[in-house]
Image (cartoon, rainbow, N blue to C red):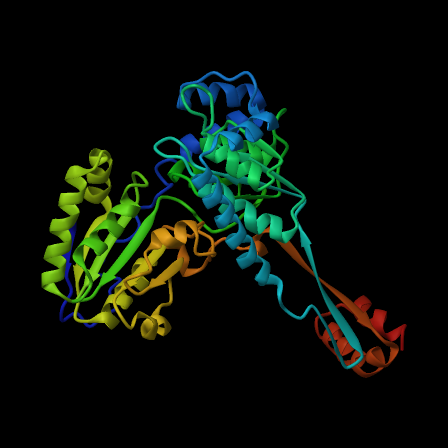
Length: 425
């Protein structure tokens, strides 16, 4: 079920011996472009046609009335409502700390103020289909609200009956989301990017999705801001040591695989016994799962088990994979954090499964995938703001620093730039 690699004795780097990304998005580029074009030209009518085609339901009203959000909240079991509220509180407190930095300083008669301005409107996407994700609603909304975004819209694929799950609507109600639309897939991304009769265009789009959603975000990037680069199908690297319980490593591999197709799940260990035990345990869990077919398909295309010489080599392998989630399921994991260079999020020690971060730890679970962790990060409040610097110069500052401006402007052949200082001198 897991494709195995024996890299013992390989001195690295591992780039040349490990499988690379499958080019997710390339094979769906044309159909996604077609969907975007239909939505851009056809607006709501195109959204209704595409929703009927892909979700199997014909909708008259794309927007979910706010009364449905309130009603959904009232229907939730108390334990689920309490869990949502706890997650929302922890997310909000975590993201609130991002702006604790000096925003005003003076140097040599020049005052520079750092102005942080939220975008006017943001769009969030929560996947549907095989599962429901109220947690993703909270993850997208918390940093947006902390950043001060005044207007937040949410798109969610509808079920066959045209409805959205109560837990998702309750999460939207808890987060104070202004508008909820029953639209999914690449068409939802196009609608938020360009606007339709029902859905006003946004400035930033966030949230994970399948490869069609991820490719749509790539295509509209530049028209709108797209945070957490390529937040696509789920990924995990589980690094297990000789003392890691095989059942724990196995279930954490299955956790990510159950998100659906096109994901990847890696086991990396320096214990041959652990590798064999984990593979056996994965097969047992999958065989008993109600999602057996989906899990088998995911592991067949993106499941790997890798044997290396030691924990340092295991981290080096992970850095090449640059996973969305990295689990270091062994004691003393924090001592190797310095070696981690590319991962969306790292979970240290056997008591820190990625599922804890998916819901309640505090940081965001919207993370970069498809090896984009090499250059991008988890969703942050900072993804919803613009940074503007405001400069106030005094006369003494112009008198002391102005000649340098003149020299540089003349060197670049820009006389008006130099004269703007000369006039003041």
